[in-house]
Image 1 (tube, helix red, strand yellow):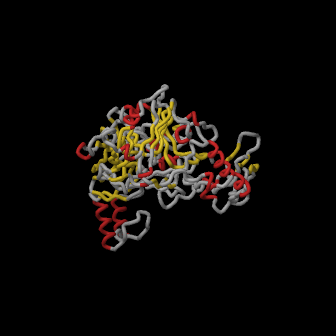
Image 2: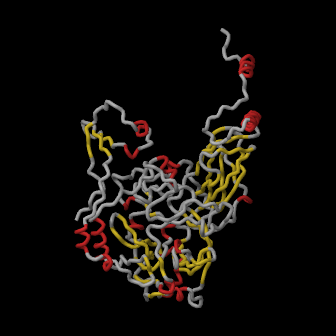
Image 3: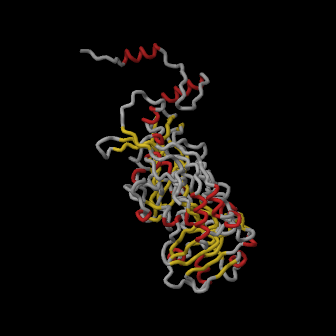
Length: 533
């Protein structure tokens, strides 16, 4: 069975000069409605327009779906107390039947948050439940309620008393563990670590603002600076569990991690599966955690058990862990082999292949300004208070944070006492009173140097990639500086106050009395506009 189209076939029309302008032409022409733009094909003797297809109605082949079988039996819950869990990876025939059901119907297209309308929240994606912004700027630890959340499906509800974890594959003695087994300190010494977790999509909006990229539902979400958080996790080292199973055999070099979530990629169904190398595990840098900030893992963060991979992108820290499998090579599951890839800038929609991308594991050095915000007006007396975070993955740490108020020409280092404590696996939050004498628009830039002298490229163009991952460039924001030490500014602000004229927003026009015609004439007499012949 072939996959049905979600919209009508492409329409190619020979170019003819239009007689009348379309009503929304100014928006389309200026790229404000780029999702309506046709592709221009200039490859032949004639020029053709390839218009975006009109949306086709959603269809459903009920007969074909019924022919697959009774879904309540085909995809029945296998384990009591495991709501939301369907085992896919052990049953290829079940995955095939799910695929048949999916391709027997069409679905509404994923929302376009790059060229289409932007949602009021940041962002709202059907089926996703996460919070990208947080306000824990003065804390090294992000409270659970403010820690960012990223899901790839629904939230499973698992009864801890009925939970079990299977460890199999290329280990000497495969075993299954209950939570009670895992928490037995006489067998497995417990460990606590403070870990910063960062999504590879942090600051993606900056890439989108420059150039559009991958149009899949999740990667093109316009996330900003908040998809990062730091928490203290308690659990055991995965290395200890491998040792309890007798160690690896048959030259196994990777550990495949299975999450309960049902994951759909290209209408193929599976569980959420990724892998990490054994070298990472044997360094005690992979935790099986059941506690977050002194509390049991919240359900949305993976209760009862999740993986924490220190210094890696958040996508490798699998939630709702139920299986670990020792394998020889990186996982072929789509999340590992087809997603979270970093492409060369000449790779895009019409020529990309998964093997051309680098699998993203360790996060590079990065930083962000969390206050003030883009396009904000800041009144100050010569210094602008800025706050933010800096981070480097792979066990490296921020050594210096620098800010510039002139677009990156002159840099000021954040004083050491204004940086939070160093940690091998954690961010450093910071604040600085940034010198600024300017009146008007300025660009504040932030960059970080880690302990290996890695730093950030100064422009987002250097970081842009088709998958819109890892915005590691220096963070730039534009703000409007109002310097109250300037005499003219003081006088003008006094006039606003005297006449009860609101200061905000910047773009609102209000007549402000103060300068008379006589004032202008007096100035022109002293400083003539004309010159003598």
